[in-house]
Length: 98
Image (cartoon, rainbow, N blue to C red; front, side, top):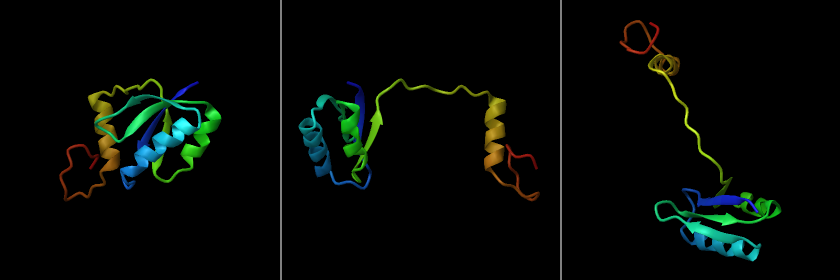
């Protein structure tokens, strides 16, 4: 059984967290961790059960997995910033191509 992270959406009332935990348990899920900084928990349950949580307007469901980072050089960062910052010839933009 895979692990899933269940978190409340920003506009969701806090009570929805307890409802989500109860629903997870009712559907055969086992809560493996409860978070204190964010409103959420990690639950282990079958794939077919997750569909009911994804359709809820109050919670976000994400399968647990390895997190990766992207390494970027200073040159790549400057190129990215310049593509995001429109400029005119009268403005000074240190990362722009003006």
